[in-house]
Length: 392
Image (cartoon, rainbow, N blue to C red; front, side, top):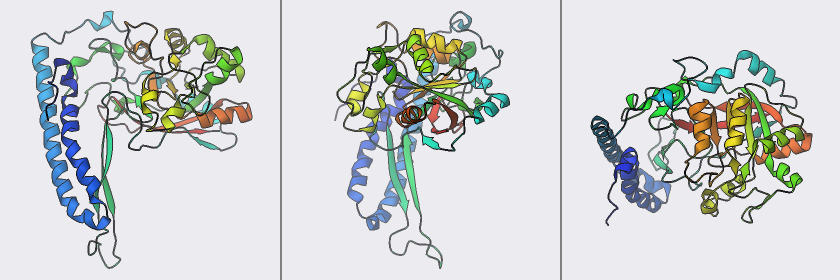
């Protein structure tokens, strides 16, 4: 089978490209495994396959890193004056934390007052194969070890166990975009010239290990209700519940109307979660994956600037990019990501489950809650899966 030739633009994704082409053979073996008794014979093969795959991935990563170094040495990766492209962090020249600096003990203590019922509302989707993924991202789980086969248990108590391998990129499902995820040319948050701080495995600056807490007040903004009440609502027939259609630009006026609906004033250190209803398509996976990925409603540049001015910590939504797709200007690519992450150090949380909290807000006429999010602080990573509970 012939594959398309690799181009220069493919270099950063070379390992993933090789990985996807190679692993197709593995999935066939897994489908044939069937009964647990047959898994024992497959375990050794799978271990060998995974080890071989690791070698392939490692080689591809080294090759990609080497090509990047060659490109850099030849001047293909330009060294930019980042002071001209990105503003400095308000927390100083050494800051790698960004807006999570705003979550002080006082902010967390004040947010705890939102816990009035003790009700926990799930706000992240389960991680499972088949959900919509952006671009060439991938995720796959494999049950790689089992001791259920006859004679495979341990000890007099006949202990058995299961283990699995999870092959996935970090920006899938409900996830956080870190400060090292998005830049302007080679300039990232706090004027960091990122080309100096990347290895074949990770970044040596702006990784998730520098994050502080997200234990703060969450504020839900229901733009479905806002647009319905204003007569500007345009939905999508693929949604089973009301959803704002793709390409709908959410303005600062829309967000402020959503706050006014529940008599909320944003405070420094808040996390804003926007309910568009688009997540209904995510829940219909895989049937509506193409529709979900074809675009989305989201905030535009006006709303992004307004949110940054409110000094929030993060902005999330039930969409795959938070910002409107297609964008307002076809010449710009994910400009809201630049405005929030690169310029303001404000994190973006994508694919948030918002419908349950929107229902709670409507039931109680209260759109604020304690935002409880766990983020595995993987060293040098650009983002990661998150678990979110809204506690009321």
